[in-house]
Image (cartoon, rainbow, N blue to C red; front, side, top):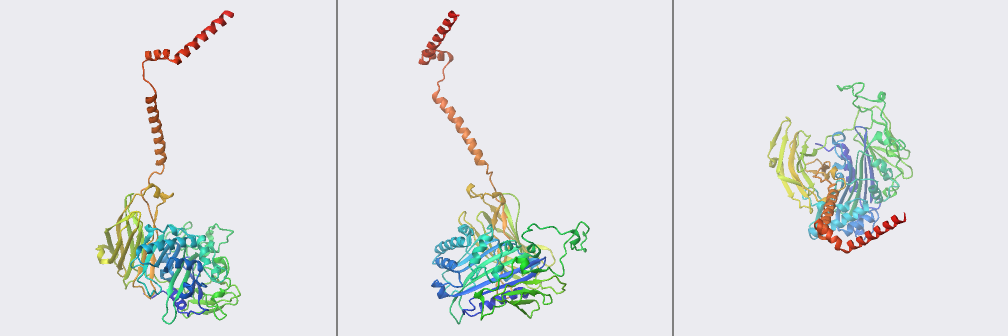
Length: 597
């Protein structure tokens, strides 16, 4: 399978930026790539890259590298860092392969992995905690909750992307927070790391309302050392924002946030469907494509170019659009259009002093941008029923008819999900569509398993698998659910507990760049106690104590005697005498009152 043209261009842009010399005019570059997708969607990929010399970085002379992040990395002895903030789900069936081959994408929530320089595992983990807590404050995220139970040490799933001459002392640590909600408070620190702070350049298009209203979005921060053979070592930071926007939804004005249904006479229905009728409509996408502009989709136009990204007084081709060359595209004055020989890509050189906007009107067109199938389809679900046990089912589909797919599956499971690896079973479905069970060793060529320790670490499972051409493989294994302590349940315990997405690394993908796939996160229902029980226990205990105390007090204080004894004791007691005197006085007073009358 050939590399898709869309992501070949993204890879070519990345290679171009990597190969730039370390001069003052090329230490910072930014790119925006726009790609209309089916179902009225638009892929917008923002890339920002800055370089600084290793010597300047060590001496804390920061220019293009943000000082706030650089000091954290130095303090935690972090040699390479990869941080991801992701929300939504990438629809591979409709949108094709992932941007950047999935290398800039993370699992749902927050995902972080880094190479830390340390002498042993304990020192590496201590520096890892320092790193996560510092990044938590920098990005206004909950990464301080990445403790030992959420930290793993991958063996074969990740490889360094930078140059490390002394790699023997590096330790790889990986952590996830699948339940983290990514929002505007994470975008603001992200923008502050950029040289132009979102004021000019392509970062001026960022709007939290548009970004987090996307069907899928991912923000990434990558730091790595680059040591070319003919120059000094550099420290490179790369920030990427990828999002898939719904064009019609994004074009809606803020004054009208509630979507209105389309009138029946304006609906485009697929009349070939057997259930098509006056009251049943299957939406049919316009063949001409949606009309849109930067102003309509992002709510603002692009505010010139970042001055630090200029080269020799003119801006680079920082905005690229992938539509057929036959389609008419209007752009602002001052920008120069450059069409690529592939027949689909055009880039624009922007003016440093004028805002930039481009618009695509609705127009008929027969040529569509090709979207090839992904290398591998992956689906992961929890099966079974009951509060004690369950099962995990993972389905891998290979769309290629000629080539098998080799990959590594990385599972990071919480400690309260206890898998039984001996129950691992594999079922393969060939081109004939007939499933058959095969020994797991026939498909699994390598296994690394680190069992969990309750409340100390989670389960780490890495499997090397191979899926034959035009086939699908289903892996299943059983697991047991642990019962947590009362204080370990969150306030929304009945919602379920988040299980981090699985990471899939394709080994034999075309091209030199690695290909990664993340599955969706899962919700694991655990046995949940009756949280009203403490109140019931308190009430019942208080009642029992009151009854017991009253009974014991009565036994200790009161004397049990007969009626005669009580009368005799009453007469002899001081109380009895006083009562007798009072009765006598009362009788005398009554007699005197009778005589007077």
